[in-house]
Figure 1 (tube, rainbow, N blue to C red):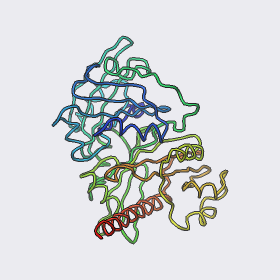
Figure 2 (cartoon, rainbow, N blue to C red; figure 1 turned 90 degrees about the vertical axis):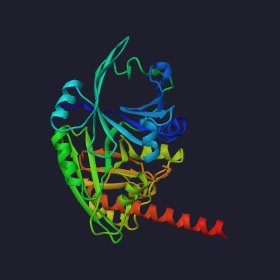
Figure 3 (spheres, rainbow, N blue to C red; figure 1 turned 45 degrees about the vertical axis):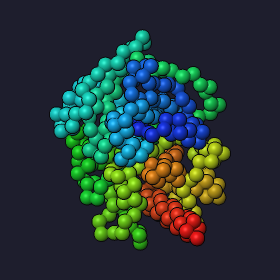
Figure 4 (tube, rainbow, N blue to C red; figure 1 turned 180 degrees about the vertical axis):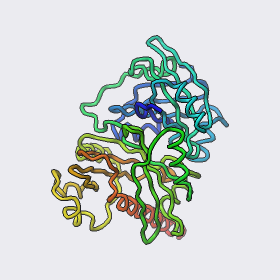
Length: 367
């Protein structure tokens, strides 16, 4: 398996314009393409959102009972296709099937005036997610020859996100090791990190698989056995099965990115009490002011001579499932092992806050 990276993500959504709004207004994406019956995509409408090297396709069905409608009915809006860029889509498809992948779509050629694109799709080992192999024999500016019409939109003065760093996946209890093995066997990814977190309320086991370049990367999490139901269990219940829990976007200046997103009311998770008091002793000297990091709820983890900074959004999903991470790497290639617990506790606090708000609202309306 020879991957060039993640080509794009396709999300199935219930309402196209509503789903696109927070990406564009909050995260700085812009619409650069449209597809629908008029472009040869019957029964569906899609928007292509881009920023930096990140490409997101949002797809809504126009008919009842098709694949998109069924997905949204079960999971709500969510990531359906994590498409992988390859030099030869047919060869990658055949090799993946030979290694045990379930075929979804045979290789198909899409042609336009500037070139062609070849797509072939297999099922992911994770829930209803799939992986398309994408071979591009066309300019990058022609996203999907013969299918997507370009949309001209004003380029921003400054893009606040650069590329997709990773896609985090939530798994059913007891399935982590089997899923890691499946990704290794089918796609040739290797396990690079492991971190288990246990708190008073719950716990999770996590591992990371990625290709040699690190451009295709999947942190995976399962609930820890013998613990009370926690945030992973909540995701699995609300999402009604395993799937993509969060998307991590890499940026060049996380403080500038946070400022830009905060101006557009993007909500961020609170950091656990005491985190910043212990930060200097844990990570040493930083170029950033600790109080500025505290104000932005930015987490930091040291890795050798470098470190990474990361912040997580509160989920605005109707089911409180999908959320987002913004990450800046300063000579660090890890995943903030020391911050995994902080993230877990932050999400737990958010769930407790939402539960308390719901209880107060029920008491208010009941009275």
